[in-house]
Image (cartoon, rainbow, N blue to C red; front, side, top):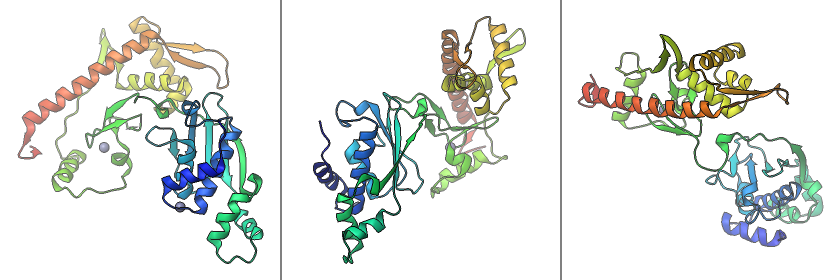
Length: 325
Ligand SMILES: [Zn+2]
Ligand SMILES: [Zn+2]
């Protein structure tokens, strides 16, 4: 299957709703990007091998979606809010990736192709169809590391925000010392809520005076703690990054401390939890053993269940007339 400019543009116009220079640029940008990473049939046989990062929410973005078939909903299109006329095309099967950026001087070159035409919009529309790839774009080979929680497929994780109580998928939570928060609760969100009951409730939960239930769970052997929330996050981070170093960074502890936690856990539980591999690019990797995964799975099931029960009982006993008293 050969990608054909005219028919791709036609399709893109239908999707976007009008013809504009952005459509022409977006179609050409996509064709070039796909060619460079060796994707011939983005909506057919290659559809599981393609991820696109767009750096603008403008007309051209719709053209990229139309040509590549990548969408936010399929998690194959990633929106990076940079305000740049650029997109990166990643071939998952070969890891080859290129970033294509529209050249700033392409507007000037467009004028040269149609001198005397006063209508800038029309000039660009016509010129962007006939200008060479080199006149329109810069292309750079790039490395893209895509995190497992950003891949298409089922969510790897769901966790409840300690403040608003809403669920967060795909590891977008922010872990503070004692709590797990969603981004808007931790950093402020894009909207504010007008519902007074809801505001009151979250204000109560946020304020130090408001009643709030906290429960903590850990497992001990002979009076010595072996496993709890912190160690759970450590193991999960090792699983995610494949590296003790990276995992320690993520949960803001030193490598040495992470190491001593692992050793202590292994000793007290009497099983090996983390397998270390020597060498490699980042000084050796680490993976969880089968036993560690199983332990983690069961601990998560236990902890998630307990929190629901405690919340429920707290509400039943302390919730009166729309608030905790
Ligand atoms: Zn447009
Ligand atoms: Zn929240």
